[in-house]
Image (cartoon, rainbow, N blue to C red; front, side):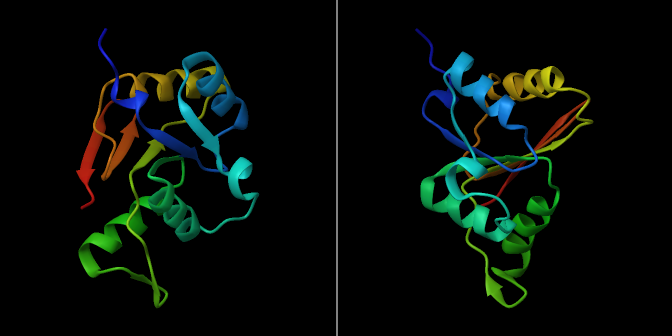
Length: 137
């Protein structure tokens, strides 16, 4: 039986990903995913979520393009943001799609997770018509 890369991965969904989608992915698809509010409550800074991702070896799923800026800043200019160190994210998936509905978002995320992509140490930007993968090591 062929295994998917996501069988071994853990994911953290940012606050902007509906909790109902996280539950669907976990309950119907067996994906090891937690919503950030289940782990640390509301209001965590992006840099704190990145630190959690690194500590827990979990890939972040978010609609927030600021994660891309933080990850790229870490690669290009070193690991400082507002004079504070930024840990290296384990992996980030940024959804640059229109969140038309819960079923639509779920379908897109499920499709990405089933593509057998290498998520570890990658910034993956998902658009309606393409996926861009950038190494973050």
